[in-house]
Image (cartoon, rainbow, N blue to C red):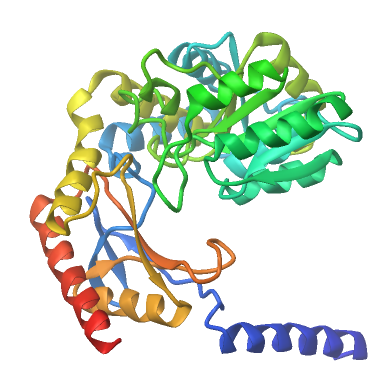
Length: 392
């Protein structure tokens, strides 16, 4: 080993040791899906209560069959970026379907949701512009804002007075302004106040980008957070993923035709990334068929979430994401381990994913779960929380 290799290893080992001391090290675990909401980890069968597969469509026969058929018809991979030879027909079909589903003129598909948010803001803003981001928005929205080179500011979570104050103070000094927010916040499960946010955006000639990764398929009759309000909200930039309720992989932006055409020309994560494999696109198309036709399927995650919250005397959930705040990293890890012993997979969420002092159990509900398992989960969690409270 050269001295350079040795110094690199010492650096990495030192960083890992520091993370271990603070209970912040992440470990990859082999997890085998066994069908429904059951997975196998370390030889044990567990009820999965923390995935983003809200409708259970990763395991749906029609979705799997569509992916297999597309691989046979078009191959295992796309072979190039879309601007070279990677534009297989299914991509264009899915873009048309998603635009119609979301009520926009056009749609453009990216390699992942993270890549979409690294692409959109830098393609629309730069030096001399302003980007305002909800402080609890997903990390990729923050990353895209920083990558753009625009002035980057956060506003307090869902605080429209704070957002309005920042727009009043800063908007006139900048050419263009973007406001970035989640639709459904992935770690808290609450919704952005889109009507108020869009009113502020219009007043200040600012463009709103809503990341609806956790809204499509489960909120607003499946059409996403914009349709959770009456009348529906109409953000000009609606981003989402194919990897959660749609059970596949990829990201997208639904917007006007001119905006999507600009993305196809200038969005670097699209221009310089190999296009999605045909199987992923076909799976998403099959999932979209189910979302558009099976109202009972769409209602089930929220029904289970409400059942769980009633069992624990919690407020009614706004989404299928229910956080149980624990506080310390150590306590959250211990609670997660106790749930695993009881037969449930609920990963502890720790900084930097959430602010320090707010480590939690992020429980998610999906259509494949059984009512009896949700009841057992509530009882197990009740015991864990009572024990922790007594120990204090």
